[in-house]
Length: 289
Image (cartoon, rainbow, N blue to C red; front, side):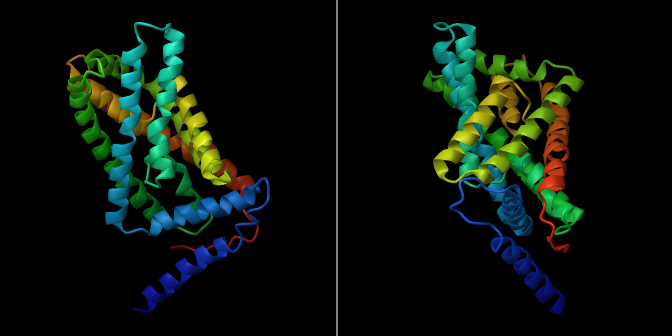
């Protein structure tokens, strides 16, 4: 009982120490140490959440992120015969950001955010690797389940409403899976890096409008670059699987393996380690939860 009380007290001290150092909200630009403290607080809050709440938050994110594909497919169906390929690509890429805005501003747990964000407390000595792996596993599984469910829904409802050509789902899925493993891996690393930067930049934003603009800019860049994102890509590939035999479950497995690995490398290595090296506060206490 005493051990549990001490742990709770320690967690509160971790959070309160971060709260006290968040800086002056009136400053035009946040210092990197201030952003780091904010990110640590967010990560610690996620690590301390019960498994059930984490799962349903992750499930919500997996479902909500699917609206990106719904709008992408609807936009491509709408403009594919009327506009040039380059203009169509730019318009469709802008639709890619919609699901991310819903997830990130709605505070749902998304795996590609947590791959970098949740590493920060481990690097600073505030959390354990076991706690990190628990968070990753719950959020990842919940995201995939939600994304798969939404893929099945829009593969049916989009063509039924007449707003999406079924072949558009096939085309999008094939564009995702037709690459060799090394290409998907490196693409996933870049996407993971950008998602880590996105979390950092959103923390630097002063208001909701600036945060929306940041999410839109970064995720549209992922869309234009056709970079591989494990959760949005799950919706894209499975909608193709559910729509025609051109995309198979083997294609999905090929995509998911290499994209997940790439995303898991990109965030921690290129963001968490680098930002932690230069932005950590010199007086951060070293504790574990």
